[in-house]
Amino acid sequence: MKYVFGVDVGGTTVKLGLFTETGTLLEKWEIPTRAEEEGSAILPDIAKALSDCLTRNLLDRADVLGVGIGVPGPVNDEGLVNRCVNLNWGVFNLHEVLGELTGFVVKAGNDANVAALGEFYDGGGKGSRSMLMITLGTGIGGGFVLNGKILNGAHGVAGEIGHLTINRDEQEFCTCGKRGCAEQYASARSVARIARKRLAKDERPSLLKSIPFLTAKDVFECASQGDSLATEILEDTYTVLGETIADACCMIDPELVVVGGGMSKAGQVLLDGIEPKFKKFMFHACKDTKFALATLGNDAGIYGGFRLIAGKTE
Image (spheres, rainbow, N blue to C red):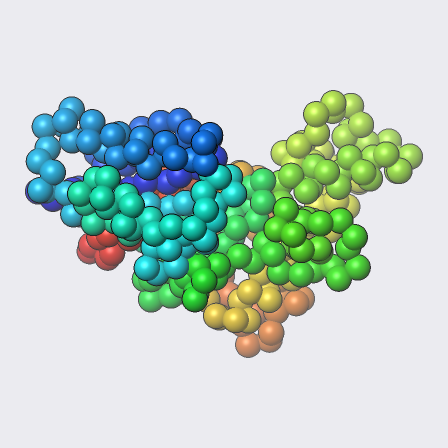
């Protein structure tokens, strides 16, 4: 039996999984992400965690086919990382550095792209031939999977649909340094921020006014109870998402759009809100593009890491 490690590096924790070569998840666990001192401890910590896993499972290093890893930043096909701000990383070749630390073959990708690969093979995208995944969390991430492979692009930033420009008149900066990105209007963080701004100006009664630390989840819950202000905020959110996804789909014409991230926990109501807006903005020939919810949750990244190494196993 051969084995594969899937690794998903987040800003707070690193998620790791041990898989059989046929895709059975044998073990998953987490370690802290130590981003201090320019993130110098992160890769050695991962290498130690993988070695410890082999020891406790009495496995031979020679039986490991490789490590697939997703990181929160641009990564090209050769493994060159071009800065991961949340990890305090600069520019270096991740394949080479982690390969030297572990002795294993390493394949790396942007975390959103790797999660998309996991959903394509093992989650909401299973059975499709081409897919766009959009992740709605603190920001908006995305990933294209075409014929079973991640589309990274020349600089490792393909799929960054959260930074498509939606409003050219925006004066506030996005975290990326641009202005008017979709992420500024339709991420979970932005939904909450916009709700707080609207509450400060809107004199209508609203359930939102009784919530001290407002989140996007609160906006969804209040809208489900018929709150007019919450409903209007979500309608604006759906419009931005519909236009953003439509623009992205015009570039690669995917068979399926999979929606994941924390906001996807709202469920079918989220898709029901986005799809009519998508059809409004979409090029007519692509209006039959299907939508689905992601199903792997926080495990999407480790499953995608496995697929970076193993590819299609069926």
